[in-house]
Image (tube, rainbow, N blue to C red):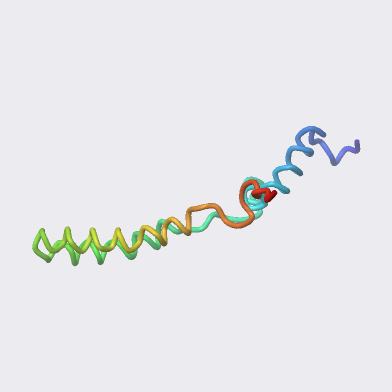
Length: 93
């Protein structure tokens, strides 16, 4: 090992495995990629919606929230759920 390489060989192997298993997590942990600011977007979208709901009667506001949650739940499930490259691939016999 040279003077410029002060990392442990075990850590390098673990880092290589992590890059192979989850490249996005490896890039995030190594500082190569910055996390997205999704919370700001939801805050910017949520404030006007909340202000609008406060102007409506309670039953109407609750009904709108329920409908939005029912419509958004499949979309959120698709975004949060595992992708085609995540997890163990099923074996067909």
